[in-house]
Length: 317
Image (cartoon, rainbow, N blue to C red; front, side, top):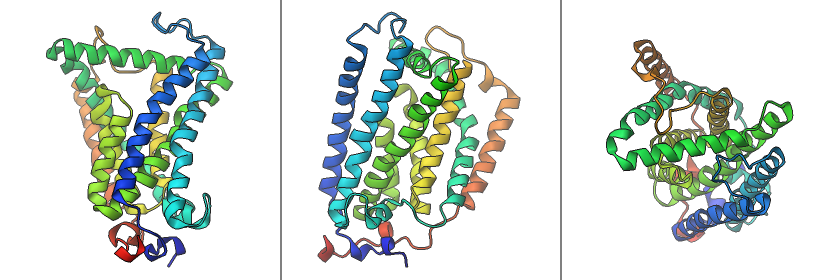
């Protein structure tokens, strides 16, 4: 048995500590983001269609965003976990508890990324259907559409221009950094800690909901929740943090490519693409979902689920 898989070697993370850490980070992250944005933009107005955001400002915002995720989301996780492993911030036991560096991680990671690709048509359809249906909700629906259109415009600005350097930086900040930092926090710490206190299934469901709320984008709440549940499921089954990180990064890369190519859901006052009403499209969606569920059925499961399925004895708290 791998040393990091033996639950009796660790203190059990308390539910109260986990919830407190979650609430603290959820409160600190938007505050840190607002402060960083203010510092790097120098207080310039962002109400002019983001025209005042120049290329140097975009670079500063990207770097600041990456640093914010590393400092607020990722680094605290190692401190939280080291408190009940007692083996140091980046010790083998701490990394093992999080699911980092375990053997046999390549196959589940590749399958997780493939599964995320197979989910993309269905997720895109949900977004497009929302675009079609939200205007029927009156002012509330139109507000959600306008907020999403504004967010898309801002993200396209962050995604950079046509330069190779800008595209590489956008991949590092918008694809890789959140894939690593958010998975460290939500799956590596929150879901894992909840699983040993509640149950793995409840931990997946709860963490997926919190993951969606964390992004503060009500328009994307349903797709983000589904993403959170899928990513949480593959972490539960594989025990390897590389699998959810690859899945998360795959989704981010797909979204970045859509932004760069100008393919997106319609905003307020815009017509939807029409793709969801095409029967050929729905055949593609159905086929991708069938392949997705076949992949899930064959997804490799870790041989020992002690960390989450066999909670530590009370004497090891």
